[in-house]
Length: 344
Image (cartoon, rainbow, N blue to C red; front, side, top):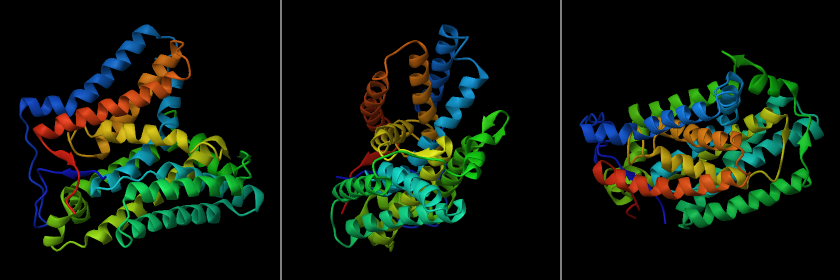
């Protein structure tokens, strides 16, 4: 089982051709901007209900920065989703990267920069294994990434000795949460920059159009002269590298690395990706829709917590959001673009 996109604006035979403009009818505008409007409505609701706690600069700075890691991870997830593959290992790759940075820096005494480089490159190797097993080995990517994710989780627990590692370099912490712009920790702006870069790649480069064509249908892509396996491998490697970067930021956010935190990232990432596919470019995984979806979910959870909701509400919220998002994505695809299984 895999997921791909069928963009109406991507040419079937020429990946270098410019995309056609999107329709601008009234129904199309409703589909594209319903989620942003709903987000604004949620902000207004919680501002009225909890003006002394929700509508504060401290709360917003915290929410924007703490969700940056989730957003970057979800942006990485979009890449294989666009080419028609589901990667279940990315959340574990993130945790592995954060723990490897902490082990090398704190326990082995490495300078923080080499530790970061090794952690990100090691994460990319996980993506390479996923890509080769899925293409050369012809194994379903869901099975491959479930296996590599579970293996990576065990490896993470082993190298961390199943304990949280504290004391990560002050330099990493400084350039993650202590530096700020307009009172907002700088890691949010890293996530914002990553969103802009991915949007540009998807919308304005031949590489982005190749990924869309591969996601639309692999048989069509091969007939168009595209090296489908190479595109799929590249997508899985790129996603793992981005997850590795997210792991580095995660270590810098708290100055520590928790080896058991991987599973908690998986559901929010998929919820954000699929909910984001209902906005801006409905029916297609896209960067700006993902940003809006990530902070829509964060706004809802933060508001409920400030109103005294129990901790388990977060899991209920993300689980329901994922199911609803997939349903809405399918509805959106009927009017514009589709999310369906790729042709082999």
